[in-house]
Length: 374
Image (cartoon, rainbow, N blue to C red; front, side, top):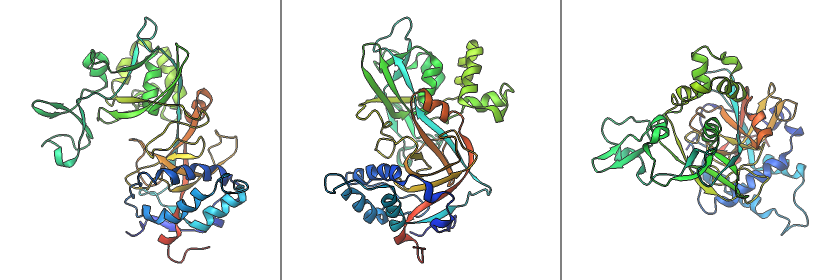
């Protein structure tokens, strides 16, 4: 497997702000992946970053802990770790220009374990008749995009979409995990793929992505922009929410344009400082985990993101080392990423405004880079 021609070799001196970053925070996120891969390896992306080449870095990361050292590593030692095991490459977007970063977060919402007059919007678990679609079992003529379908006595059929489900297509199947008070809140839980639930019975619960109905995602921001309701340059999560609040009678009209529907599973909140366990099967680290195109990239890959116009995280240009630990249907392309901002309203305020050009630098295991700069 050879590296993609989209990768242009660089040195760490070429990375703006590299020496000023907190590499220790990125190392903590990387180390979580290092332990997970003992259970199940990550799949190599098609851009040529072979998972097996991470073995040496993962092995060293697993040995560093307060249990077998007099202390955990400091920031400079963490920086040296990445410089020792990796070499940076700049990723050229396929269509030229700059890459793009957006933001995501874990909502925290109030929920009820039972339906009430106030709490009437369900979050649903995966239905028993929803099956994964692969090329080997895809019926002739079925949309090649669909990754899920409905198992019926007559074979596999497209699953009911958002509008059909919200109009009752799955009623009576006992799929309800919890009930929310607001349809827009529930929609953004779907968009983020996870949420912490402050249950009315006093429990703190968490739901995370389990599956989806399979249809394409259509964002409400795009719909509202095309309808002339919100200028494209002003589309944020906040502006979308404000529009829905001002037009409650049109919520279904807009949301049902997004046919994709998300199903959830319950998950524990083991560490309140970390996010949900995502596609890479490790808890997301606020400000250090990034969602990437998993077909192109390999989970666990460190990415240095240079987005000087992005200041929402800490009021200064965003230049950080991130670890690839999630993916998303809207995250497509080699220089495209979604930055995990954390949990709760403050994180939502950050994530909701992130849409910035960025330079992407992948840190590739040195074994894959001939003549790399040390």
